[in-house]
Image (cartoon, rainbow, N blue to C red; front, side):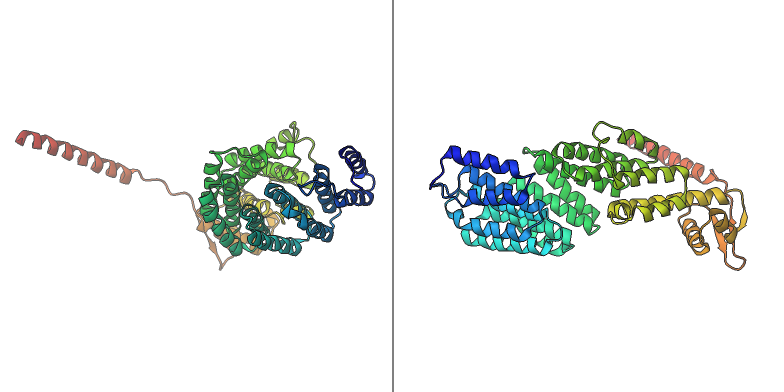
Length: 424
């Protein structure tokens, strides 16, 4: 028997109230609403459509990938009756819900490929391009960078002809991430610049704008411009917080990292007490607080213990691990220079003892510092000593001679020009 609109609304609202109480009953209720034949020409009523989206959310929360795939298969017969825009929204919602479930890479990739083929068969170019964009992002997360770049290049040329600027921004942004993962910083910057250029001519949603800002911060951090990187991370953080996006915590962590790398670790407590940041806690934030303290104390052993304690938050985050390695190296150099400063000749073993680090590590670092001209000296392997030279006194005679020659050249040129005027 056909339900009226009011009855369907009441049933829908009753099932929605069950979502947080009993997920299984809610799923069964949404399934019942979805299976009803409401007699409309559009294939689905609005309450059935909303039930489908709620089912996607519940299956995602329960990490039930098989039910998500089956839901899309059950709904596919209705796609012929539905408007194309609504079909695209349903497919994208299911695919995005699958992406939220951990350890479903293979199933997610298979689902994307299956519906790309379906879109090609049904001539749904708009939907196909968006699924391919998600597939390219999946290739990035799986480390299949060349496949991702190839797919993005094909999409780029196709989308440019259609002048779909919103999708083009997403494509350029993903391309920038792929190049960054391949450590190709110039191309990553070029793609991000292209994304920004296109985004300036259209309205970009707050989520996409925050993603662009976050990528800008990452690239500036890799260029050692931590002041600019902090600004971008701050903008991205402000964009993610209202959307309750989990990447907000990553941006806050990178903001703190930028301050530490810029020798402004004292500002870390102030940032954490800010209006939006005060609600964020956890090991990611505590790891940066501990790093700021270790850098202030100039303690290399604290750095090692922090890396061990917060391994997941530091070592497993490539951006943080890369920059903290540089920070630890700089701190080691500063400590070594402070130790050897009073000496003109000192045993390397004594330096290692004073800094409390293994002798081979100290010897390697000293030789690297000499090659980098951080100080003048040599390592005497015969005696196991470091010989430090004084900075040579600068002789200004050569510079003065060059200035005299340059001045004489200007005088001669001036006289030559005057001679030409007299002859004329």
